[in-house]
Amino acid sequence: MALRLVQAGEGHPRPLVLAFLVSSDLDPKLRAAFGPRPCIVADGLANGPMMEELLEFAHHRAGVHEVSRVALIGYSAGCQRVRALCMSGVRASAYLLADGTHASWPPAEWQIAWLRALADDARRGRILLVATHTFQTYTEELPKGRAFASTVRVLRMGTGLPLERAGPLERPAITRQGALWVYSYASAKADATAHAAQCSRVLPEMCARHVGPWLDVEAPRRTQQGRGSVGLGLLGIAAKLLFQRPER
Image 1 (cartoon, rainbow, N blue to C red):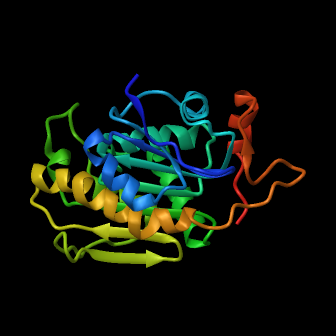
Image 2 (image 1 turned 90 degrees about the vertical axis):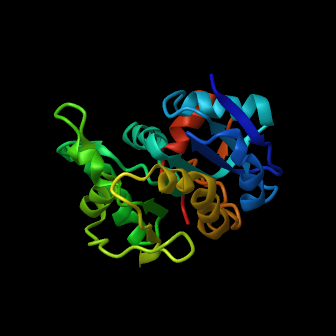
């Protein structure tokens, strides 16, 4: 298991941040972006434990007993874990997808539908969705059986946005609709340096600019229906409660 505790966080309840395909080099930047309150759990691998194991890890390693809000963060192939969690029924308060919204070639409808649903909720302000992309379209020109859809193509299909403009790291093109934010970064058709910068620089910037402030709100009150903050004493029940959409 490649899970690690970046930060235990403080308070009850506290926000829970889950980040996938994020190396330990980013840990100081994540702590600076979110401040001391959230519990931050990261995985250096794209594939791995799902929600119940992630909750159990936070419970035992960080002493988390209640969760106020959840953020799911993926870089590159780590976005596939976010997709898998969404399709398993997990509903977070905030999502950050950093240059990782790939799909098969051609894309299957189910690979677009989950993103379309998140984008629609974000437009209505129910959740926060921040997505970034480069223009590395070489993936669609690979030999048959190896090709896969580029991140910009999948974002166009999932959000309905044209996403034709782009800018450098310092001034990306920004498209916003409600709580849906898409950042478009210029790149070559095949550009490993631009892709790496999406993790080392862009991801922590988006955490500080959007995800951290979204989580840093008054924790929702517990209701009779069990929505709002989530107790982690019984992890099986806690996982089911997290599947419900949090109130805002």
